[in-house]
Amino acid sequence: MIPPQFEYHRASSLEEAIEILSEDPNAKPLAGGQSLIPLLKLRAIAPSKLVDIGRLKELSYIRPEGEGLAIGALTTHWDLERWAGPCGVLSEAARQIGDPQIRAMGTIGGSLAHADPAADWPAVVLALGATIEIKGPSGPREVPAEDFFQGPYTTALQQGELVVGIRISRCPPKASYVKIARSHNDFAIAGVAAALWVKDGVVEEARLAATGVGLKPVRLKRAEESIRGRRATADVLAEVAEAASKEVEPISDVRASAEYRRAMAGIAARRAVRRALGL
Ligand SMILES: Cc1cc2nc3c(=O)[nH]c(=O)nc-3n(C[C@H](O)[C@H](O)[C@H](O)COP(=O)(O)OP(=O)(O)OC[C@H]3O[C@@H](n4cnc5c(N)ncnc54)[C@H](O)[C@@H]3O)c2cc1C
Image 1: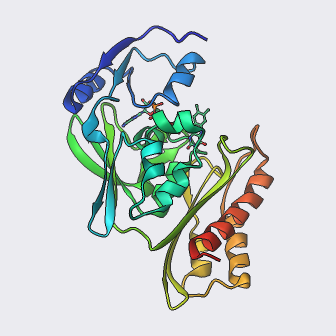
Image 2: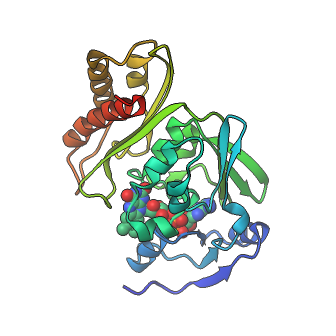
């Protein structure tokens, strides 16, 4: 379908984008366009203005910082797929997103701001304990990923605010992202990211997060507890799977029933832990 009419502004600076967005509540930022353009074509949204932030090169970077990483909002899925530095789980997750065209254009900031309850990045940033860097008319602020996602397509962003970056303070030595989907370029039925810290074969610290199994991405706290302080034996992995499938609250939709998603959450959690540990 043909999108409804809108004004197009190509922002030449972050400040200009924020100014236009904060003046008009019906204006929307345009990053990679891989979620926004389909919505426009379906006429599901009718913004008055699109503020194209796609040329703001200063928002496209991946920088090691101490034990962690800083990522610009406009870093594409493809940039992250090619990333070979710390937090290798980013590359593993990126290559499971959509198809090459989507990955070439879509951005991590756009994906987080869009907050699709089945998107891949939200689970990954939750497991990594990331902070979302935001800039708006009142200046910059940082929101922990846990507080950023508030519901389906709903985030902590206020009018005029943009996601400008993602900060991970500590890359986990062992991590993995496992996605179970109907086909390679489809959204997750269940996706689980696992970040683990291991000493002498014992999992000292675990952060697990899931997507596709609720109205927003969730930490799998009971699954984390079931492995913390223990070795990843077959019995412990079975406990991880059981805990994960019990603690999620999926809904049924065209892709899968709630029951099936629940079962897949358990399987994805077990696989993510096993893959992270190289088992
Ligand atoms: C066929 C298809 C398959 C896909 N498969 C997957 C998949 O398997 N997994 C997955 O996770 N995703 C998938 N996607 C979505 C894709 O990852 C998008 O790239 C992503 O959701 C949005 O990023 P974008 O840069 O394209 O944002 P856009 O489409 O430009 O914007 C998305 C929304 O976020 C807002 N926005 C964008 N950038 C910012 C910012 N910096 N600050 C504040 N608001 C902002 C926009 O106003 C809009 O509301 C798929 C998309 C398609 C079309």
